[in-house]
Amino acid sequence: MKSAVVLLPGLNRDRDMIAALTKISGHAPVTVWQTDTEIPDVDLIAIPGGFSFGDYLRCGAIAARSPVMRAVAEKAARGVMVVGVCNGFQILVEAGLLPGALMRNASLKFVCREVKLQVVNANTAFTRGYRPNQVIRCPVAHHDGNYFADAETLARIEGEGQVVFRYAENTNPNGSINDIAGIVSAGGNVLGLMPHPENLIEAAHGGSDGRALFEGALELAA
Amino acid sequence: MIKARVTVTLKNGVLDPQGKAIEHALTGLGFDGVGQVRQGKVFDLELEGADKAKAEADLKAMCDKLLANTVIENYAVEIA
Image (tube, rainbow over all chains, first blue to last red):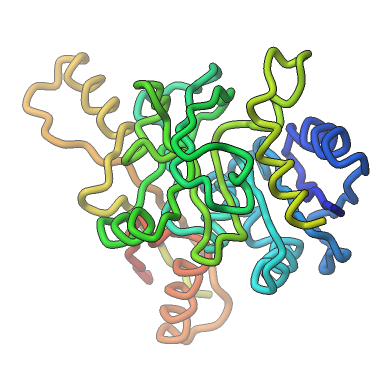
């Protein structure tokens, strides 16, 4: 049940992620810095949200080429679970660990609100705590969450069950193709999603719909 | 010293809401007959040495690795 949180300059949701992992697992995650070339033995690596490197060039582009992300890629290749939330998702697609790209919201506006998510695939390490097609609440806060993939990639990820979360009940906040909110890698051990499940894990948050995602990942790893 | 310009543009078929907003703003300013507007990026780079073929190969590698996201973007390299 050991976890690590990746820290990069410009992230601002790292404390939320550390708090969520600590409360859910009972253990504080280790933290790794952008220049670290090795990550300790952990079962789950989390990349939090924020604006790494000021979102310069493209969201997540600079962070994706940082030394610590090479270490994350090595761990992911060995089957370690990796979750990237918001900017973390952008970093994972820029690093090539997940397919597609995340573009400026179709509305051109920063969106900060609650959305509904449909659990499209409940058969992953991250979503096994949910029922298939369960609709959960989750907050979003981003400017560049508009998921895009070319037709061939889209057909593949839809066909292989890699689309894990879809915006439901007409709450797509950003114009994402096929209402895609979160996807997993072909191996199933890397998850990226724009919404913030770490911000809905206890009564004080107004709900705990996000909790099962971390419980699922951490329980499997135990 | 070699001077180069890299232009990065969105691929056809990729929605460009920023270009769309610029298009509407131009029309609002009274510029009639503005068709589609697509927004891109320009990078001016200085490279050491005089080997243009090597510079071109290096620039293409830079585009593939960082300057462009080839999932959604095309790039063009121009050497002065």
